[in-house]
Length: 118
Image (cartoon, rainbow, N blue to C red):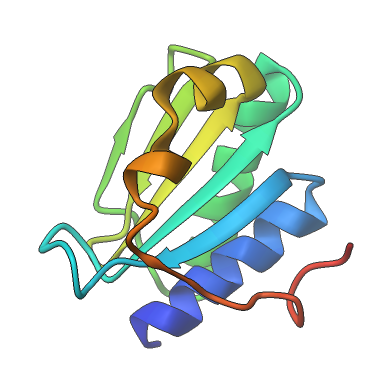
């Protein structure tokens, strides 16, 4: 599975579980951290955890294991590191506060309209 396929699969899982404002940003030209950044919002702390859990389970089922997880106990921002793809699941308040969308604005938005519903 390529890093783009992984990022798109993650976006699909987040959408299927009612994740909000899902973005996939290609960052490989501007950072050595990863190839793609996936950002999504949950509508409560329980939803944030559920989104992260569902991504981890779905990708495990696809044979892709998470390398590292941060923030699971915080309830407001969970990071899942898949080496080439980094996933950020935020509460609405935390997403606005940390504003990663602005931080990675030099990255290229990936069209995911075919894997998420509007």
